[in-house]
Image 1 (cartoon, rainbow, N blue to C red):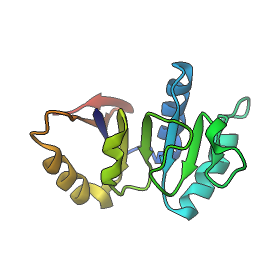
Image 2 (cartoon, helix red, strand yellow; image 1 turned 60 degrees about the horizontal axis):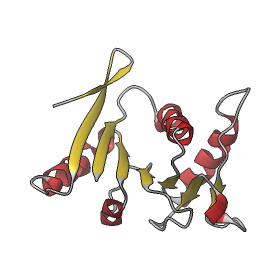
Image 3 (tube, rainbow, N blue to C red; image 1 turned 135 degrees about the vertical axis):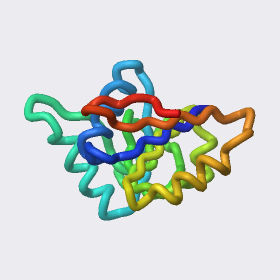
Image 4 (tube, helix red, strand yellow; image 1 turned 180 degrees about the horizontal axis):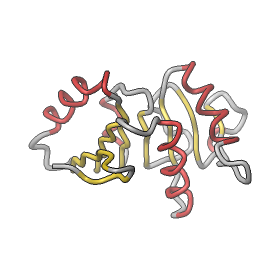
Length: 144
C-alpha cells in the first residue's frame, strides 16, 4: 500500500484534490474522500463547479445509492463505493486508511507536526510505501 503525503504550502486542497480525482477517474479508479462535515459540504460544491465546462461525478455517504459513486465523500473510513483509494482531506490521519491500496494524506502548515508523527509511525513497515510531495515553483515534486 502507498501513502502519499501532500504538504499544501502553495495551493489549497480546493486546487489539488480535483486534479487527483480527475486522474483516478481517467484510470477507472474509485475514491473515498474523508473530512469533517463542514469541509465535506465545501468539497461537494467544489467538485460540481471547479471547472466551468465540467464536473466530477460524485456523491455523499448520505445519498440513496452511495455504492454507485466513483467519488464518494464521507466523514468515516467506510468505502461503500468499493474505493481502493482514499483522500484524507482535512489533515487528520486515520489508521483505517491503511486498509486501502493508496492513501492521499493532505496537510497544511498547521498539520506538519501530526504528519511527521504519522511518517515516523509508518517507518519500517514493509507493507507501506511512504512518499512525500511538496510544491516547488508551482509543480509537485517528490521530496526526500
